[in-house]
Length: 609
Ligand code: AGP
Image (tube, rainbow, N blue to C red; front, side):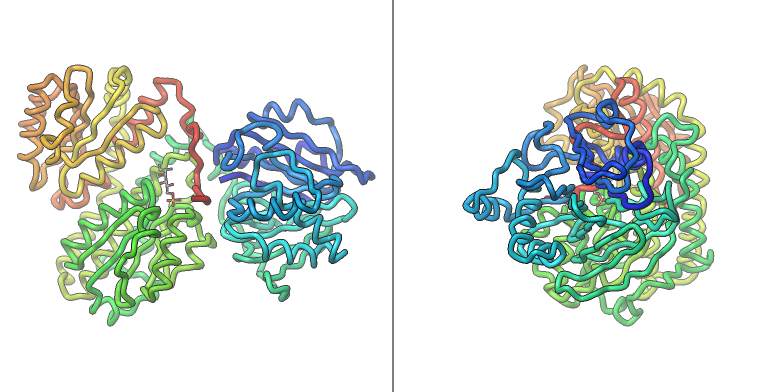
């Protein structure tokens, strides 16, 4: 989850490097730093500090530079401070390195280096990289040869950008952490995330896993870890800079909440012809799908909640058994995955370490792997057998919103596709469901037009110190997602629970100081939700209910309510209730003055365990 940037080329003001690094701020960080070589000098200037880039800027001289690297750190080993900030360097201060990931065997490597007289300054795992490289340059002389030795010794995940003071080159390494190379007219830009590159160029090379790159001012070479030359193609960045700008919105999160109807509209036209679902690129034969009996779904956080909705849909329509778990558990369970099973891995970033690890574990068992992912070229899309892109565009807000409803929508389409292949859905039934799916974006737009009352309610509910989110059936995952949204941007403790579990504990929480969000659309479990709401009311709990427009019963029982349009097929309700849940969290956090797009301690993509 750190941000890394490197530049080599015609000389530029150092502000170029820092502004490029600022494009990665949304990933969240606690310290930052740069190392660069001023024009016509061999000396390396190093500036790093705890805190935001704004503070770093004040320390920088107005230099022109031609080679430089920069970093935003989200601490994993060693507290956030100046010493632990990157770049890190070797004993001679010749080699400067920035790193994203975790070197899992850094302790033994550090022991090996200490025995050889290396002196360390920081508590980080990263600092062993420049020292190890220094040690092997002493033995191999050739920095590239030495780098191959180093990368084959390191265990764990690492995206590395490095400069060596006497060389007109930067070196890059990619293993389990994303790294892309932007091709500029005047040089090359390297970054851990494409939005940092897309402002300067649309020409990009996505390094594959286990690759080393050597970049000079006019050329670049790529090798695999076995020293074999590789020739990755220069592709085109699809992200337009305005996509990454907030536009008229106060926060990326709010912009992305409002983008959802359009995204679902595009997904509908991309993956259906109104008559049937069509996954042209999906590499799962109808024969395979017909015999499929069991699916595993692995994901983290919001993606897990989308997968949970998918579980209800797949079991109901495709009549397959679905086992779901968070990736951090799945990867360590001895799951009885067979080669006939399908594993669906869901990830917005496609770089979540736990999800990638659960995919690798499943692959070793011979299962088929389907990814549902928002970032083309991400590691997940390269490691699964086939994947369905969610095309939600870059999701900048750390709190996932548009990716969530895009994942649920794609899961619904896949469910229809599978149910049809298995003969459990007729073409007429498919057309019916697709007709309702087509209306979802219009229903979402209606909800988005009526957020003013929710803004008022959120202001009133901001005073509560603890929230319970309750839902049943397919909206139990909606309750989990609503609670996650609130807690991760407002820092208010919030718990999602199946409403039927109230009596098994949570009801002890209820009194006049507790807020309860009840998701109660008019579905088959509506009456059960009515009883839950009466129980909460009897204990003076403060209720915000999410109801179907036209509701007559609950509306008189609750203090505050928000309506969603009436659906014929209530299985689509998670796609509607997500909007008020996301917006409620946003308005509460805004009312509390929280840092919404970059909540504390969180990163957009958790690329380490
Ligand atoms: C959701 O709002 C969080 N940002 C987080 O839970 C996120 O969903 C999780 O880390 C999974 O990320 P991924 O979808 O990129 O794998």
